[in-house]
Image (cartoon, rainbow, N blue to C red; front, side):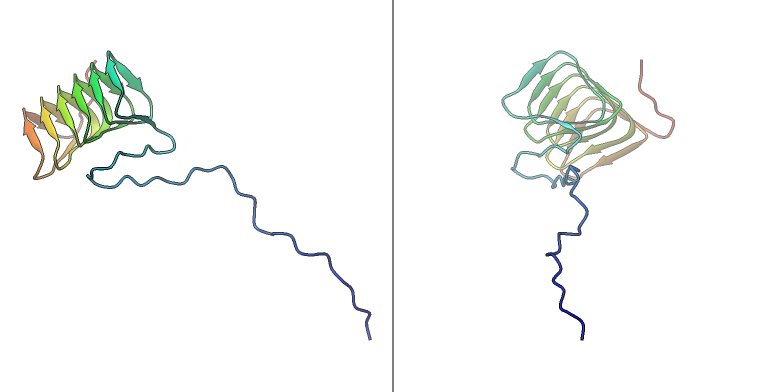
Amino acid sequence: MRPFTRFPPRRDTEPPQTNRPEPSVVPGPSNRTFMPTPSGAFLSRGVSIKGSVKFLNELVIDREVEGTLDSTGTLTIGEHARIRGDIRTKSVKVRGTVEGNVFVTERCELQAGCTLRGDIEAPRLMVDENATFCGSAKVGTGMSLPD
């Protein structure tokens, strides 16, 4: 008969947690404030900007901006946002109000409840049936941001 050997208690064998952010989920139009994605920036209510806004990756705006928005990234305009100026970016989702022209290199999405007064140039344009769009649209491949 073999003698009984006591082993030390097992330690947790799961790999250590890394500091990876949880992926964010931005719901469709609602009355709630949008949450930013882990890699993006967020301009919430109470913020008002006059001048140019430049960003690289992602930006969610849910307040007033008077001036141009310039980026190689993705812009989300929240339902409480009011933008007065041109937008030049890779892609944009509009849920609020924009008074200005929009130039995108990938996709422009006008979601329910938004109002856009200005022209759009985009390879792809999606307009929800409950969006308001007053302007002209130039849609097709080979679009690039104007200088």
